[in-house]
Image 1 (cartoon, rainbow, N blue to C red):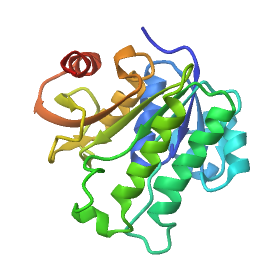
Image 2 (cartoon, rainbow, N blue to C red; image 1 turned 30 degrees about the horizontal axis):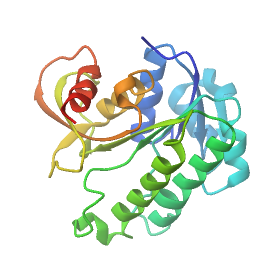
Image 3 (cartoon, rainbow, N blue to C red; image 1 turned 90 degrees about the horizontal axis):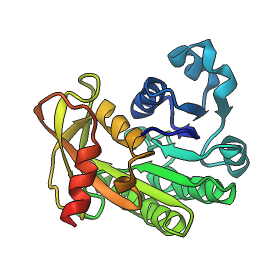
Image 4 (spheres, rainbow, N blue to C red; image 1 turned 180 degrees about the vertical axis):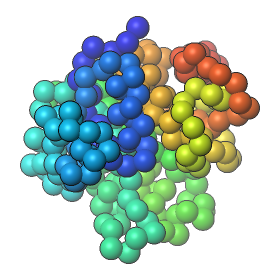
Length: 235
């Protein structure tokens, strides 16, 4: 089973967002791009995406409203750049921006919201949190997505990947999926995070749950559906 709706990718020109777009293209799923720079999007994806682009920021409600028109799902792969002092703080992007995007998407009747978050968001003492409390901000964003999209006729999936790496295409490693923020550490290819996000569009077991995910040994995979199902069966 695959997905027949239109998917908005927020943060499409980021390193994870680019892979989300590639996987949507792979499965032949209709998509739109919500990006800060149309020029960068065309440079990455080619001129054929020009009619799929909405330029704007998740800090701007009107720009979000333009982006979420006529879409059935959102995959949110945005994240603040905590290493750049010129960038907005995590509170503006990972919390307020994500919440604003989810609110406006729901108001436009977008039924499905998939959020790429981070491993260890519930652990305030994690060293990453010294950078603008980025993990705490991500958790607060998550909480609002769960609240908004946990209601009847809507659904969410929240993915908390381990450390993000850029090694290769997806589906070349076995995976460990879990819930409850019990995985201490681990890494995962951005391409596999994107694969998990896109598959969550049509895998029923992915709906209305929060998953941690890291890669394990090298082993080709047909899909990640079985990992979603395993977690649900174990709950």
